[in-house]
Image (cartoon, rainbow, N blue to C red; front, side, top):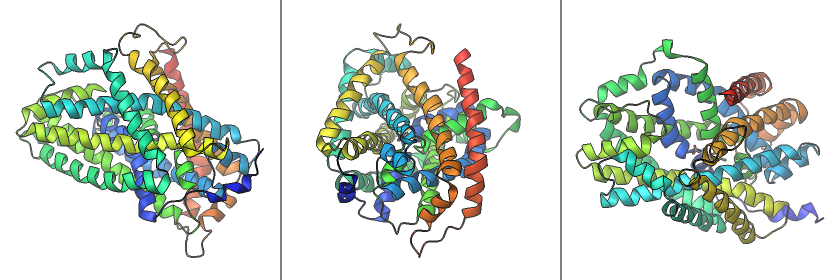
Length: 451
Ligand code: PFF
């Protein structure tokens, strides 16, 4: 075994702004642009939005701060981090690493679809029947794999360059660009004739539509969207130095993530209504409905290309954080070089992704036993609905009761210049509110196994 003290040469972020952009880059992703609008569309619009906001404030802030505390305190990958704080708890870090690993394998497949759609929109080649085009493309045996490979290689290229020279640099360029592009598309959407019905659906809550499903979807989405429960923020936090104001970051990053999700709703839902499409049509909203919407609007091709480029930026800044979780583990625990870690980890992810992609076509008849889901859906289900909430629940218990809130608070107040304003509130949230809320959601999402 090598001496842990060698880890001192650890890389770190160049600036506080750089860290915030990278962490916001991790958070802002397909979850915001693809999942949030369709979940809102499916769950009654504004009532989902209000529930989601409440959950972000209560759970998102609490858990994000918790992860950053663990990361900065230990300066290690998730496994090493938990183990350093309590020798019996390394397993929790491992759960996170496995989760991030599995997510990237199918996330990269969807990232590939986005690259395909940038090109197809640019060439104006999506054809009349958007659904047939989409299903034909994702179900094909070879083409989606090529795009999956391209997406993975681009992710690898950034992570190769390390923390400040790769991840931070890419995020500092892509995140502001993404924000500007999204505002342009949102303005276009809300100024369309007929947008007002979509705006009402999105902004005026109809509380009679509230039910358990809304709650479960909202909390699951908070976890996924904020990259919680799998050590991504432990990893990013581990490259932070001692004088950083963690509390401030744990407010700003979910704030930015939520702003993007809300803007994405403004970009998508009014346009969907204006052109008479169904908002509740689910995952196809981005790849099927939107191309039709863009085609029907003046200068739609331009907005379409801008939209898919911004989705690509969002996806890749999330993908690099997913890759960095396993990479950090290989560097810190196995003492591999960065390049070796990235190459090996991403190659295995790529191979798993191949099966996920093929499960949309050639392998569509193959179902994972017990779950009764195809490979792609099973990966999504196991990670988002099982592993992420379990990771989150155990983390809340770990912080609240095992390692203890006192130690955690000390870490927040490590620098004499930093105050912890919401200290009392955070204690209540991490010890009581977060575990109870996550537990309920976990139970009900496991209940879906009986479908
Ligand atoms: N937060 C990302 C999204 O909203 O698309 C997904 C994600 C990235 C989840 C990184 C988890 C993670 F560690």
